[in-house]
Image (tube, rainbow, N blue to C red; front, side, top):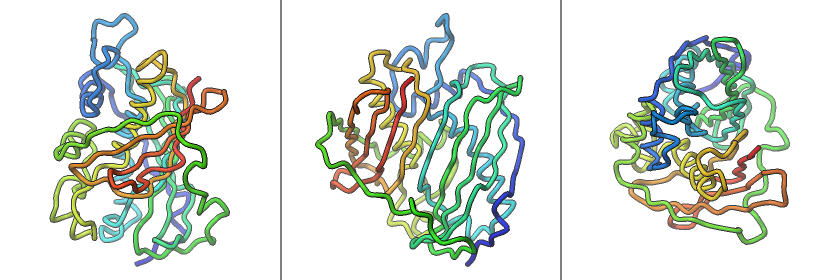
Length: 281
């Protein structure tokens, strides 16, 4: 199986999607959030969207793109590898958002083809809301593209001990709850037969759920809590998270500038997420 060089530059959309309170609250609930900012519909400033909520309205574009340029056999081999989200502002109740997805790059990597897609979302006035560069590895798929770039194999982990750590239990049904609340349906997360046919040992938790749980933990430590002004979230996914299990988020507060570095370990101590970064304005 092979991905051709002509994939780069392919674009789909726009998709127009309406953001309502039900969707925002469901996503926060799936993550176990309890902060009133996510649920109090009488709040003067309105409901807050969780910083990772943009993955919900970006997912349909990912499906559109795969259906346009990839065979079902190749699309089924996709694994979330990297994520870089820039929040120009958080989505709000009543937003009518317009999202376009464009393939930025494709290159061979040892596990398979590494494809980066940019999701650009604007509001009804054409103002930017979020921009995400979403990297996928298509396992075992060849790629007609340039050799891996210099940053393809970054150094893992941190030399210094973390400033803090927290343990997050992952319930056996979390992937099912997250699928329905986020409206992100990929059967490798909920259907054991499909997961095993894709070469996985069992269903696994969505990478975006792992990332969102870590971001929630970081925000719980911030003085403003859920209202903390998150402007950017990025990471690299390095291992699957099984269900049920426990993950451990570790963080480094940095020396200033509002940048918090973090990583996520599985209960067995394997790195599930590396080079995590949250920027607080």
